[in-house]
Amino acid sequence: MDARPAGGRSGPAPASAREILALAVPALGALAAEPLYVLVDTAIVGHLGTPQLGGLGIASTILLTSASIFVFLAYGTTGSVARRLGAGDHAGAAHLAVQGLWLALGLALVVGTALLVAGPTLIRWLGGEGDVARHAGVYLSISLAGLPALFVTMAGTGYLRGVQDTRTPLVVAATTAVANLVIQVVLIEGFDRGIGASALATVLAQTGGAAEYLRRIVGAARATGASLRPDAGALRRLGRIGFDLFVRTAALRLSLVAATAVAARAGEVPLGGHQIAFEVWAFLALALDALAIAAQALVARDLGADVPDRARATAARLLRWGTTFGVATGLVIAALRVPLAGLFSPDAEVVAVATTLLLWVAVLQPVAGAVFALDGVLIGAGDFRFLARAMAVVAVAFVVAAAAVGAADRPITWLWAAWAGLMLGRLVPLLARLRGGRWAVTGVEPP
Image (cartoon, rainbow, N blue to C red):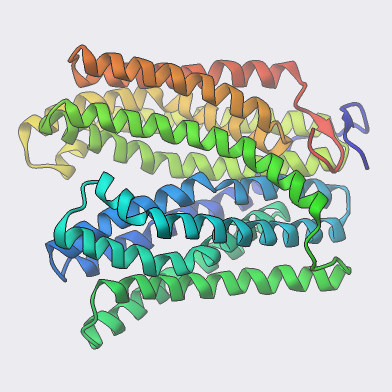
């Protein structure tokens, strides 16, 4: 079935609250479980010594940045698979999942080799010297063995989200997090191994999780008769989707790096306050990201089923949910900003800065809720090129504004004013795109 402008059968009733929650709640659990890897590593490696902890911090920054940039392995697969599910093409969904695995393995090989070669340079750029650099190198080099498993997990997660299953990724994420903890305790505490054992434990846990995704996808392919061989045409389509999502994610990541760099130059107290506010922002973003995941799966399914009116109605409902959630969390943060800031630091000056910045966090939550929901809708619709261009333009504008704030030595609140501009700059084109309706293209292939 070819992609075609919306205009097929009508199904105006939006996805039910039960459908949305059935996808969003387990997705939230899985998203919350993922940071446990880093937390467990930090807690255990921290007892090995300060150089080891510093090395872990640098190596983790490199690894997490790589993972975040290639998250399109999940996002790109979700919508493509869900469209085929909506059309009743289960063999096509399984075929795309297999191609997602091939793409993940190929990218892991390329990225892993590049990081292995460039690792020492990246470690130096991030300030690693002496023992810290040595420990970072050990952790990074061993962790790269788990990169194929990490990328396969992202692709497998995208497939399961596409078939409306977010519970399995939650179970896999929780199980591997526990396994990581147990293996680390055994290797480091039981056998007195060092930071390399911590990396090895994570690799083993990730490999176990990836094996479960492989089992499910291969099983689905065999059950539907889908080929397990690489398909050049499908890989090219996934690669095109991946490139657009890569641009979008890289632009967003650039904005985050620019914000951190400007905050770091503002001094220890402003940086401390900024870090507290941003950690709260990131925590709230997990819930909003879960809603975006539900949007991806539901909208793509409806467009694949040739019911664009239902996709539009679902998009409108998700937008209301995101905005309402943002208003609610914003009110809570505004009311609790003083004691909340105090939980993170005993320093009165840092708390004062954080209290002010948390008010910015609170005010921006409704905007963030709408942006995340709309992002999910348009990713599910396959409107990747628009998302890439819109995010790139806004990111460049923010980087320029942030640099101007830093150069003029303005207070840290000016940086958050620029961040507010970035969020509003994302919201306006997303709303215009939603209302224009050009995103609602039906068929098994995204536009």
